[in-house]
Image 1 (spheres, each protein chain N blue to C red):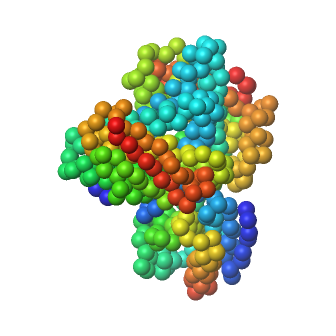
Image 2 (cartoon, rainbow over the protein chains, first blue to last red):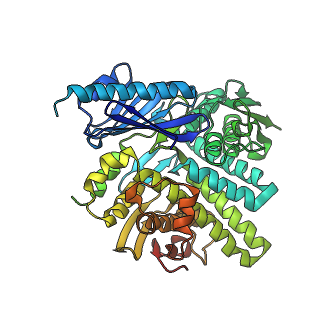
Image 3 (tube, each protein chain N blue to C red):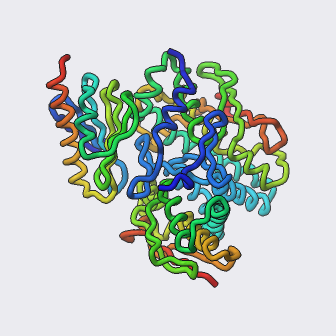
Length: 105
Length: 172
Length: 217
């Protein structure tokens, strides 16, 4: 584990992947809202069902999401700089946090 | 990606096959650890074994795919070999400078190199014996050669500090 | 809910593992390959043959090295899978007991193309007996080599021992970090699980059978 960052209600943990890529785990205190997939799918490929889906942005990242477990893992592409990998993870966490705030408890 | 290079799954028997050969999912931890075991155990003999075994895998698989549906030209056979490599997770190979008379190829992010760096860090010598052998096997099938006429080696490796992995394939 | 193996196999298979535009397959927090069984078999049995040619008593050394590769595989691969997002979504909701961690992982293995793993008996914290049909190691051996006097499923033996160690010697339920120190802690303990293959297709048996027990063998 390299770093823990809080983005609102979302905890982002940066994990060592290899010299060119870290992995980012996103966790929240309650299940991710169902609207999350719709939001993430804009301009990106996705596959899987409602309990487990994968969002893929070529040249950027793959995000595997277990919404009911309130957990996701981002694996950035190796070609992306480490700093932009971090920015992308925080941006995704921001989207999750925003939707959590909007969603009824 | 053509359906011909996607392994067939038999969910009842828990098998995957491509070109009549078994395909199995394994991650970089096992792949590079097993390779290190072979390198430690066989020393100077290991690179030839690892490369030849990969060449045999490519030869057997790509020959069968050719029999099932000809790619159309030697260049297309080599391109199909590269497609298999990429679809199966070994990295995207640029084979534009590789033909039935040999040549060069590169892989920007080769599985074995990336896996080796992630698990063991940098090494002094190239480690992508599988990719080298696979590319040689593709040339063997493309040219209809007997296998001993084609040799391949990795000239530069990401795991040894190069910006990408580069391969030289020669036909004798 | 008990472990529903077919649902797990279909869910894992349905993830559609295929290289992305980099030609890599990120999954379970790992890089996967759809590798060629012949390749593993050729290099593994070549190592075995080389050691035997040097001295017949070195067969045991080769076997130990190849089983160790299987243990390392299980530690990282099974460990990675059992702490993955995919596991949380697909398998974890079915888990009611520690034994279900073993059964759940065996179900995932059955989506990896290794052949059909089937738990014959599981004695909590003590013993696992498992059969493998269509083991990729043994079927490859049978095709290319003469009948063996000793079993030949090294990856499977190491994998089964590793699975028991992750569940009972360590505590996979606590999401450990898969460090070198943790590996040594659970695999070098005097109470570590070891596995022996009691039947093998390569020896003429109808299937392969692996027994993992605490007693070092």
